[in-house]
Amino acid sequence: MILETIIPGFSILRQIFLNWFRFDITSLVAKAIFAAIVASAGQSIVEGIKELLFKFCFSSVTVPVADRLNREVLTWMSVHVVEKGSRHFAAKSSKRHGKSYHYQPSDFDERTPSVRYLPTIGAQWFWHRGRPFLFRQYESTDKLRNAGGGFEIKISCLGRNPEPLKRFLEDCKIFDDKINEGLTMVHTKGHHYNADCWSEPILKSSRPLDTVDLDVETKQDLVNDITEYLHPSARRSYGRRGIPYRRGYLFYGPPGTGKTSMCLALAGHFKLELYTLSGYGVRDDALAKLFATLPPKCIVLLEDIDSAGVTREHMIDEDGEKTKNQTRNGPPEQPPGHPNAQGITLSGLLNAIDGTTSQEGRVLIMTSNTPETLEPALVRPGRIDKQVFFGPISKQSAENLFVRIFSNTGDTDTGECSPIWLADGGLDRQELKDLATLFAEKIPVGTVTPAEVQGFLINNRKPRDSVAKVESWVQSTIEARRKRALEIMEAKKSERVNGSAPPVGPDLRSLSSQFAFPSPMYLLEQT
Ligand SMILES: Nc1ncnc2c1ncn2[C@@H]1O[C@H](COP(=O)(O)OP(=O)(O)OP(=O)(O)O)[C@@H](O)[C@H]1O
Image 1 (cartoon, protein in one colour):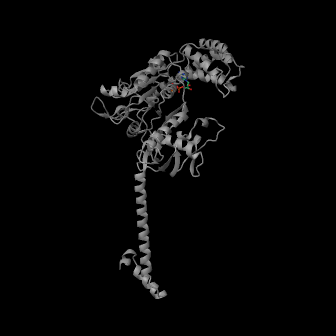
Image 2: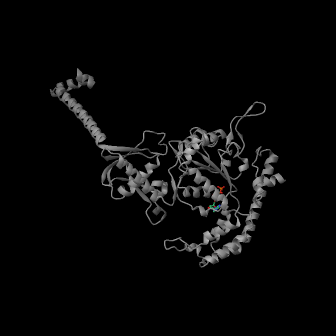
Image 3: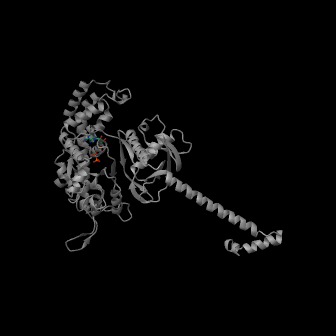
């Protein structure tokens, strides 16, 4: 009867065995079931005792997926345990995936293999400072925090004192800082399970601040300002005065004048991770989540904020009618279904920047080519505390750039200049300086950007030749720009005639007045 309940159809089976083999299977099946019950209960009891013993004799720490410490532990494990002789491990191609914990400075040397070895899922014992530790990696159940992928880590050590665990984590951090010296971590927008999240960091060589040319006082002022803001006591003093602990900067100027380079250099100088957004194919809720998941100290770069397509949703016109998605700046409205069709709105952006869920402690930098087209609300004090202008190359910057590009130091391990720059047979320091002064004098103020000069020097490679050709190059660059501006102007004019021009166009007059560059819109206004 009981067996019939456990195994439906048992009585029929029993009858078949009785008729065919004259054998009653009841006692055999009952014994088998009893043995299975005892075995499974025994396993649970053993597991329970093991768990209890583990809890009693070991200390443990869990490192969440999205935390920087997670990568630091993996890096330590990779170098100290896996690469020293693990038999079971995961291998990843560091260069292809660009994940930070696979990178090491040697990765930049093309001769070294680009494969990194990492601990695999599961448990692994290792020794640290004379103690046994257990490393375990498993899939996180918190799907929201695990949006960027990866595994949760649990480290345990023998003994009820958690101090060795803390020391281990501290050592992982110190080790990671050491191998990442001279590198800056840059995060961009990534995707995981269809959700927007910050990508795993890509490591970039830190750019020294003195390789970004900017007016000396402006640069010093900017660096001082950020230094004061990042001072350990600053957070508390902001709090005591009831001021949100945030600082925002607007870097503006024409393309190729060093805005992005300065952000990278600042991140390296202050040893902060850089979180950068450009392209803006995100919705308000995703942007808010990205800002909410920033670490407490970092630099956030919103590149080309004027092209973010920020819309003012449901503006009320004079007749009380709702006019949908009026665009003040950025590209024209996208048709429904376009990936940007439901991009960020102005209120969404403002909310992400300083809403209640937005992280405090970050340095926010927005860059723009056309600052006068930005919404006043976006750049008001409190959101943008300082505006820094990046302009065309100055004489001093041109000189610096020339010396930097042709100087004869440190390209190779032997301290020599790389052969690609030696086409002139090498120059001594004074000769180089004199040539640089000559070169800079031949560039009229306000005509070309640092990026253009850099491109010219790199293409030319020969210092003397560059000096000889620079004047004609500047003229042809100005001429090409003027031609392009006239073409755009003609196109705009015909758009106006056909009635397809946007109602409000970017007003570049203020920038044009600071440059010899003729801005297309400026020329258009003049006609
Ligand atoms: N002020 C500068 N000092 C040193 N290098 C510069 C400077 N400006 C531009 N460059 C060089 O020009 C290239 C482009 O610079 P960068 O991307 O920083 O310009 P940008 O102002 O951010 O341009 P965009 O507005 O198009 O984003 C880089 O390789 C950088 O090294």
